[in-house]
Image 1 (cartoon, rainbow, N blue to C red):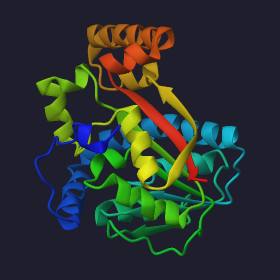
Image 2: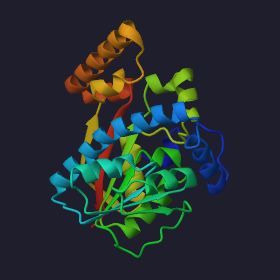
Image 3: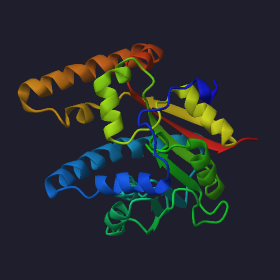
Image 4: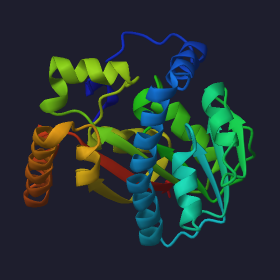
Length: 262
């Protein structure tokens, strides 16, 4: 599939890295109540993300002694990996100074670098494993970013939401995606094309319709929780019955482990 055939624009334009960094600077500089809620949300999401990283590395026979997460945010995923004693030396890179400050305060993470959005301060093959978890959908040039991470890391796990579906095309979902900074709406073929253009091959992959806890997180009251549980049951059952149909109807998370092509 050509990237030209993929519907990618949700936010009209992000002209430079400085503006992109400013967007996330504001996201990590919220009022205390909102910040605490979002930190709990990121910690919950980190559990599933870590499950995916560990599972894919196991399938590929990779036991990293050094790991770099690019776009590490507040460091929730790296902390979850540390709790599992996975990944060896854990480093993060992030474009938001506010997020870097939060991640640097976490003793579980060995180092966190402020990233300029284009060049990593690491020599070629410096890390066994690179992680791009829910990052590619946020950047204007995912191929360039993936190339740079693959230069510094011998293997790369990437994860994205597959938003090229009926549910994500609704106006309310588009508005929500724009609100949280999504620039790309990807399907599985698009992710593989991005990897190919970055001179990588997909070694193994998985999909996740998300666990019940994720669907319940923002549910309010008994009725809201019952509705969220029903939504989870329907989506989980449909994904198990026909993952292809599920991807066409609603968003699932897709993760893959990429190695240098050839």
